[in-house]
Each structure stands twice: as C-alpha cells, then as structure tokens.
Image (cartoon, rainbow, N blue to C red; front, side, top):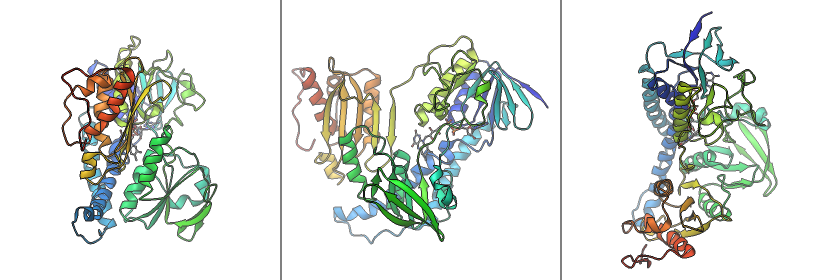
Length: 469
Ligand SMILES: Cc1cc2nc3c(=O)[nH]c(=O)nc-3n(C[C@H](O)[C@H](O)[C@H](O)COP(=O)(O)OP(=O)(O)OC[C@H]3O[C@@H](n4cnc5c(N)ncnc54)[C@H](O)[C@@H]3O)c2cc1C
C-alpha cells in the first residue's frame, strides 16, 4: 500500500477536474488527478458533443423536408440510421481523443487511475488500497443519469445519454422521459431522424422554464415534431422486446415503444465519496455546502467544481468553477473569491432556447419581441418564437433574457455579454445592428424597455421600426 503525497488532489478528470488540476499546477502546486476511467470528459464522450452531432443529423433531414417552402423539389429524406450513428460516434471519438491528449500532456506521475473516497478532510483512500495525503482536495466528480425506480422492471429497454449513442441503428420508437433541455434536444433530433417519439414528464414545467408565455410558444413549436405529455404518472412493463408504457393524468393512454430514453435529471456523482469524513457540511440533497465565489466547502481544505456542485450543470461553468477551485486549493488557506459570470444556458432545439441571468417579472421591466413576423426569420421561413428581455426598472440595465427564437443560441451571447458589461437597453440600441438580421428582432424588446424607464433616444438616433426588422 503506497502513500501518495501531493499539494492538491483532484477527484475527477472531466472538464472541471482538468481545469482545476491545470490551475493548481500553474500556481506551483504538486498535483494528483484521480479518475476511475480517464475515458475523456462527459462533454466529449456522452454529453454536449454526441448530442449536438445527433442534432446536426436531424437538422440535415429537416432541411431537406423544408426545402419545398422555397420551391425546391426533393424526395423525402432517406435516413440511414446506421450511417447517422456511425458519424456521431466517429466525430465523438475525434473529440474524445482530443480530451485524452490533454491527459498525455500532464507531467509524469500526475494521473492516477482509481475511485477515491475521503478518509479525512485532506486524505483519500483509492480502491486499490493506496492512500493520498494532500494539502487540499477538489471534488470534480460530475453528475450521472438517474433512472427512477419505476423503470427498473424495464431496465433492459432503458437508454440514457450514456447508451443512446452506442445503438447500432436508430430505433423505431422512443419514449423520452423528461421534458427538460436534455430530453427535448434528443427528442427533437430523434423525431427529425424519423424515430416515432413522445415526451413524458411527471412535472408541469416545459424545458425547465418558469415563464409560461415562452414555454407555451416553445411547446407549440416543438410539438410539431413530437407530442409532449406533462403532469403524467407513468407505469412501464416489458412487452416482448418492447416497453408498454401507460400513463395516468391528462390524456391518459398506453403505447408501445422500442425504448425509453430517460433524461430525468443528472444528480451529482457524490455517492461513495465518504463525504462524512471530509469535515464538510452537506445540504438536504447530500450535496456539499460551498461558497459559490471561492468554491470552498465550509472552512475545510475541500473545494468543489462542475456538475458535482448541482449548481449550473453546463460546460463553461465546469471550466470556470474548476479553475477557481484549483486556484484556491493551491493557495489554501489563502482563499479568494473568483469571478462568476451571469447564469447562461442554451437548449439546442429548433428554435433554440436560451435563458440568461435574472428572469423575474415582478422585479424587472420586460420588453418582448415576437419572431412570428420578423423580417429575416420570414426570409428563412423560420418566423416563429418569442423573446423577453428583463431590465432594472430604475436604470434600464439589462439583467436577464428568455429567448425561444431562431438564432437564439447566437443572439443570447450578445445579451449575456451586454449584461456582463452592465449595459442598458439604451446602450445596446446605440450600437450598430445590421439589416436584415435576426438580431434586429431584439430592437422592439429593447425599445419597450427604454420607453418604460424613460430613456430618450439621442437626437441623432432613430428608434422607429423599419419594415422587415
Ligand atoms: C446529453 C448531454 C448534453 C449536454 N449538452 C451540453 C451542451 O450542449 N452545452 C453545455 O454547456 N453543457 C452540456 N452538457 C453538460 C456538460 O456536459 C457538463 O456540465 C460537463 O461535462 C460537466 O463536467 P464535469 O467536469 O463536472 O464532469 P465530468 O466531465 O462528468 O467529469 C467527472 C469525472 O469524475 C470521474 N469520477 C466520478 N466519481 C469518481 C470517484 N469517486 N473517483 C474518481 N473519479 C470519479 C468520472 O469518471 C468523470 O471522468 C450536456 C450534458 C449531457 C449529459
């Protein structure tokens, strides 16, 4: 039994762990990066990248179908499921290999394969019997799919994001469990690839949205591709090589599906970590209580980052929080706040959904823009969607946005950056906006905010609306 000595031990070699290890090493710390697989990050192997690859294939099929709108005649697209999944895996492997190359670039002795658990606040035991003594530890163990017990009887027909992309061919039918962003992205991609899809959720929220107006508009648009049943209680049994799924509640029914794709949340992967030995406090969900600026857990030499925090499970946050955690772990006990940016999440459906910052009707002035008749959106035959921008009533400073509209995945960056720059709606309107673009559609929402807060346009700026804007 060996005792490995280091300054900073990082548990988990995903996006957060890699960022934490790198930052700690840059601070001069001797680091140890522990992972049970070193397979590549979740993003590259079973998350962002393979899901976007599947979505890209669905969009290609949809573009063929939509061509008729422009007077272009085509036959219906022929989807070769084997080829679709072959490309998904080939490109996914390319991205995963790139993340594994970053392991190869680590200094010798930094990587240690194994499952780690705490034996004290800065000591770990590995599953092969070796121990680790560190000055500080970073928990970067990510999250994992959760399959509710009700689906145990049909486990052999349950897919998650960890198994979907390994299918040799596209299935005939899939019930997607979970109407959150991950479920809806995959549901639309599969539906556009010719899979018969239905989405079920026991809750009432669509895409995790609090805003009923945007949720309703988005739901109508996505229901062109597949039905969504919210507020249902599900019961599943095996039916030969398929699943018989019945549901109570609104529109009760029963249907056979080849598979269930469970996208019902990804809780932090903290089981078996021995957190009770780490000298830290956990909340009711057994997630460590941490300072969101320093990423420190209480006063212990323990830091946490990425999906393990259960705070903002998206990639850029894993990278940012990993960096802060690694920095502070290396400098412990001199712990300093790091900079966190505005909350920002995108769902890559058609149309995309973006949610940024503080979205609170009661505390804000709200500007709305419909994309039902927006100029560039009409040109592209994508004219549907709704955007709401939120601003401080006293100043018109932008604080948040909900955008379900064509191009929202790009336009959202402009709003997130404006929020980061503490810009007002007036500031944004005083910048050039090209014609005819999807961005022009934001002008009406920004103008409404300016009117509501009494921001008067400078005499040399026109705030009138242009045809086709
Ligand atoms: C289908 C899907 C699509 C997504 N799409 C997007 C997207 O488009 N954009 C976006 O921003 N985000 C997206 N995400 C979220 C994004 O992938 C995650 O936020 C990010 O990958 C989390 O990184 P992480 O470092 O926290 O965890 P991971 O990358 O999961 O790393 C955790 C590592 O810890 C290891 N580990 C766990 N426990 C132990 C232990 N006890 N001992 C040793 N090692 C351990 C694991 O093996 C793993 O390697 C998506 C996620 C999914 C599932």
